[in-house]
Length: 108
Image (tube, rainbow, N blue to C red; front, side):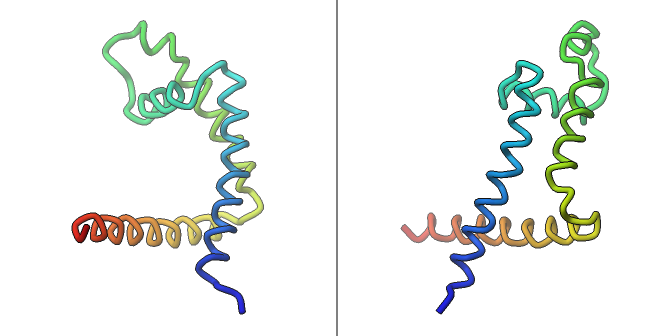
């Protein structure tokens, strides 16, 4: 008998690993670590910074769009509609798992 919850976990972990390998390879091309890239991504989405020198050094306009294209290719096996559906389902799963984790912490 197949345990669908455990099967989902294995499939989810393998899918995440495969997509993450694409993302890490993309980030590494720019000589960045994941933490550094995370900062750049945040800055990209927050818009212009008052310190022009920082913005020039991080190359926001050239790095993030190229990385986003790599991630889009990595998940391209799903249509845009399927990607949106997967995101909704995984968001629901993640939020519920986080709530259950919090409730476990309060009962210990």
